[in-house]
Length: 424
Image (cartoon, rainbow, N blue to C red):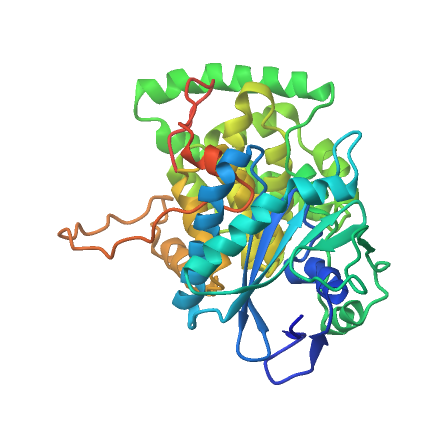
């Protein structure tokens, strides 16, 4: 197979060469920042030496009937996104990562996913970009769908290298690249509670919604509710910041303990208002960013039962703060979960696209600082001048977001949840 080069620092610094499917499989967690599970991953290659470029991850659709359209959309998304960033890919490598089901072997997973691998190759080929390699990774082994050499890719598969023992692992460690565990573990930090405490949190959300809705309907209190929400969120951020802990998975339980059910319910419902959520997004940098990220993660875990969709706002805020502070893998996971809950949530859509296209978050940080600086002492933004409508550039066609399936993206957003969700 072709050699591929992955930068471990700036473009002028040391590069490493991947010479085999085994080294390519070992590099995958370092390309994404985590071990993907139940995922299609595609990586663009540029130049004669196959320099890695843009990358894309999507959950494997459960129905094979979805594979053809999903493969086409993935190919279009990666190739067109690469072109927007500067250059069309000269090739692509792809990975299919899925653990065996009960009673299934890794080799059976590989054979079951073979049609999807072929669809990916055909979709990219139809756009005149060749697929140099497709690997299936399952049950600690990998198989190549492209390499016919049984010496490096035997029919029974090849065991993955032990973690931390490869050249790629050494180079990534030297460059400060960190693998944050598996995708499943990262998502678990943001998913709703399934413990007995979930019932108590659901009751607190019921009570908070019952008290909040009449206030909103009565009129004239929306801004007051927003101020109360932000004041309480500020107190919780300070509480988390004063507590010991670095915001890693081991401190999530302590973070949960520091936040009361009633407090969590009040902030969750308050964040459903778009203006309140946008004000909360200003806690994005400096000493306040880390405890703010811990708060948004904790609130995402509190959106239990019928309030699951209310997690879209705190998940989006978690994704934004993670991206703003340089943790792009965690940002993509949080934003992917937000879009899984609500594919039409505009703030998450924009952040996810910007993060995936490698844009600098400083542009948005500058806008939020400007909004904060323009705010009047009373806490209200200054009235904005109304501009005449102008033409807009057409948006690129919608494609599946990482962490979702095409079916979910096409699904109709559910309604009728308790509480209020007034903003996107």
